[in-house]
Image 1 (tube, one colour):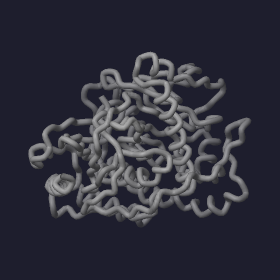
Image 2: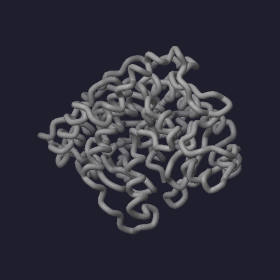
Image 3: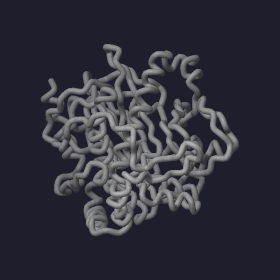
Image 4: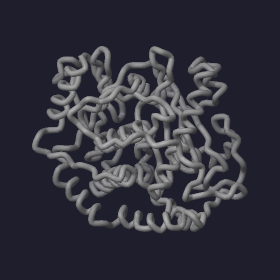
Length: 401
């Protein structure tokens, strides 16, 4: 069962000691983008009007790979991670208002009666299992999602009630659709359900989408598509729209509304990413229904855990030369494990190298800073992180009574 099966919705103005700089939601994006694709061959070209913006983004790859900021963050990761790596929480033992705990791959979910408390840990998941713990990852994911939740309210309501701690979101309960909506703009990926994996096996009709012959890895699709999945024994299982409705997982009306919202969210995410020198490649969304019947976005939004991001400025050259795009997500960690073991079947996995763990932590922070244009705050390690979260959650729940 997805960890967001316990999430809920209805946005209320947050009242909490933890503050995030949030500006009003942006209006729907214009149809033009810095990176455009010819309809006949799906190979990207840059429009003349976009050239100055692309030049502005030319240094983005240098920032990712070798910069003073990267060195500063890596130093913080290596010196403070023993106190800031949150692999497990037990708030039901430290916060009296919490009655139960459900452990997801990344989030620990607690029930307080009316509300749910979702703690985003530093656990790193892929291949339907936990691979490692990444310093500051939980804080980055939670803050990235909050940034996107605030800016996508013109598309759909969301689940945030309050954010009392950098790692914590409090939400109302709702009925969660047992379907994940995966939006894709490119033929790529390395997991069993990734579009390139199934396409390379010869499949040309995937989750109700007819795919043409002749596509190559990392190529842009003619149009964005949805490839829904549902859960079975903790594995993602591809499913068609007709199967979703026939199995009673969603009504046709709910499926059509959620599909529209998912594609609109993805288009908006593509635009924002492009404005910041990035390509939003694919992502997954989860939705639930509130007591009043309204559909809400839940879980997380456009994080490097739920999405793939590439550096836009270097994509074209690398694609034309058959090279993997420079990514700002967990794909390179997936590839490392695939090269060193069978991550689906091996009972014991090798330990991820420290340099790889630190690099992934930096890339998550880099993405947050690139998208939000704000500096990631490395919190003091003087107070143990579990004690800090317990204190903040207890205070927030008391204020919600």
